Length: 441
Image (tube, rainbow, N blue to C red):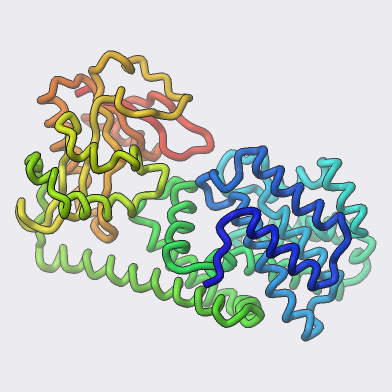
């Protein structure tokens, strides 16, 4: 199975395809290395837990070259087209000033227009920077409504400025098709390069970056693929047909896996409402918390969380066995039923939080930190999370904690501020993700 997980591995594959395509001018390798350096130096390297990191940028570039190779045989893409596609793919998501994970195309274009090193590299490659900008603008997503209208206006301005296209409608149409080609590669590339574990990790990264509730990961992934396959089927089929058979299989296997998961989620919701299933929060005995099988079940649920929400992952088992750690599970039916979730936390001082957080109570040992709740897919929205939080809070109060702190998306905290909980923001983060809040017990 073809899957490249590091920038050096992807770099080598990209260079091999460039050489194979006869694009061996040093400026193209310099562009590649410049992109890797830019992403790493701006905190967007492989350690950045966001969808639009250096891995995504290089995967799109690699798959662009691979897919364009077959289209060159059918004379739909020329060598010069390939150079434009390569350059646009390399820089399509680099927005160093972005306030959210999803790049703003205007920010990308601003960087391309002002960065002296990049302008020099493009000049040395004999490419028209306006065409590069037009291709990047065509990757705007979603390609509907105001997003599409604004992008089309800017694309037309680029075409008017370019000597290649200003008086040539046929070439304008050609480059629009190339931009559409790139936009589809942008959306399918990661899903063609690995199995479902990679696909799900990508979906979780995207959800975490956009501050989605975990319950939306599978649902919105299915909507994403339905839009791609139904509304952009012409170009989607063209791109996928241009890829090796095993990569096409990866893509469709991953799509089907998301559809299957969504079907399972709907079945769970149906069973819960139709059968009137009962969910019960439980305070587990220490003998149970030391049981290897119990630990294994909890960890499997824990792994469904996006990585930034997996606090103290390396010491997970030890924390469950620690009597100072408060643990509430959620079971189906009764206190012996199937475990479908848990809430865990302990003294604030046991956790290493982001350096931006300045909690005035840190060191006073009067605050319990509640880690993000863990629930199995399909069981969100049934009220179990609230029941676990309530029982966790009761235990924290019994242990004489005065405050509870945790992370949640901004809208959720705002509701808790206005509710009987009287929550308060302690630290708000930009780009907006999960903020840190406090509740007085």
